[in-house]
Length: 271
Image 1 (cartoon, rainbow, N blue to C red):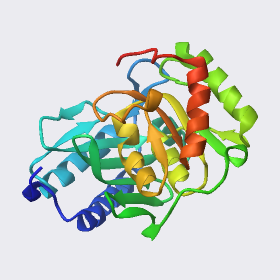
Image 2: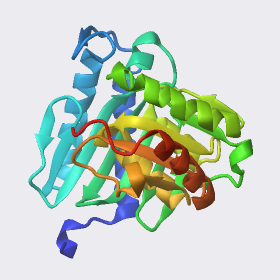
Image 3: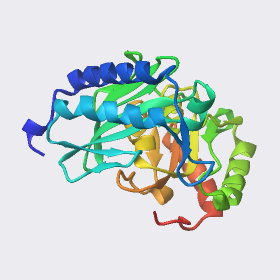
Image 4: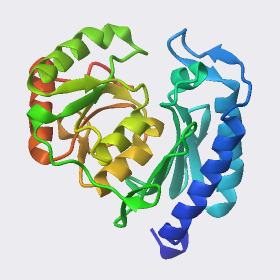
C-alpha cells in the first residue's frame, strides 16, 4: 500500500461521522416500504437502499481509489481500499421503531480496517476508531470491561437467516449462560460489538455474520482492547460470512471458544 492511498485517518474519521449523521437524519423518521430478500426473516426497507445510495455518493469522492462492498447489492471490490457498508444494521428493529439499529461503515485495506464508525440512527450515539488511534464513543475514549467470565454478559443470536443452525446455537448459548451472568440479544451485530468495546457487555458469539455487519465493530473492539476471531481462532475475513467469537480479554475469549468447540468441530457452511 502506498501512502497516496491512505488519507489522514483522524480527519477521515470526522468526515465519515458527519456523512453518517446526515444519512441518519435522512432516514430517521422517513416513511418506507418493506420487502423480503429470502423470506420474512430477512427484510429490506426502501430506506436501507436509499441510505446506501447516499453513502455511496458521499464517500466516493473522499477516496477515489476505494471500492465498495455494501449489503444491498453493492459490490465493487477490485480496489486497494474498500468501503464496507451496512446502511441499516438491525433492519428488523428499524422497521419496528426499536432504537437498536445503526449505520456501520469501515474503510478496509486487505485484511486491515483503517477507520470505522457505527452510528445509532435513533439516538445519535456514535462509536468510532482509527487503526492505532484508539476507540471512541461520541468522541471520548472507551475500553473493554475488566469483568471475568462469571460476571459477564453474553451478546448473541440464533442464526435467524438459517434456523437449521439454531439447535447448535442453543447448546452453545446454554453452556455459556450457565457460566456467565446473563445473555443479551439486541438484534444488531454492529452495535453489540460496540457495546462490548465500551464495557457494556463482555462476551460475544454469533454463528454466521457478514463483513458489513462487523467490519467497523471489529476495528472499534480491537482498538478498545478486546478480542474477536472467527471459528477456531481464524482471522476475521472481509470477503465472506463467518462465525464470530469475542470477549473483553484473552482469558474469557479462550473459555468461550472452548464452549463453542465443544459443540462444533467445523463450520456448518461455506458461504
